Image 1: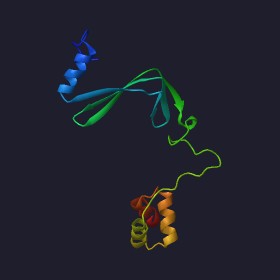
Image 2: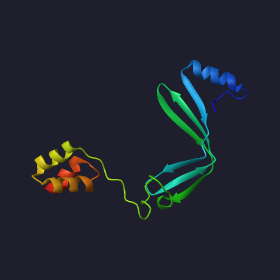
Image 3: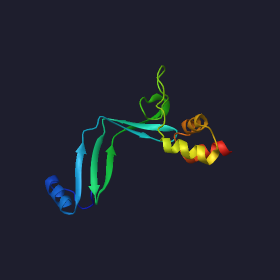
Length: 131
């Protein structure tokens, strides 16, 4: 793990790291999924370690990964919702609706439709309505 630490007692290493403000803890994970742009890496039965240094947390994952298409993953990982269910509506505030209406002259319904179409992002909705 660290150069020159071969043969060191793990408890001593942990104590030394903690003295330097580094905390390490193993996590009992059954699966790790890393979502890439066009595919996902799935690691079954991984060894996962969480390390926190100066408030920043990193994770070390060790295991055999397999590549799968995003469409084979369920849940909220980029796959289409299962048949018979609706995708969750984007959240936007009444202030967002008012802003879009004010900036574009659109009706309430047009502003809401534009916000819905652009994941609740007012700037994108305004650009779409003006374009």
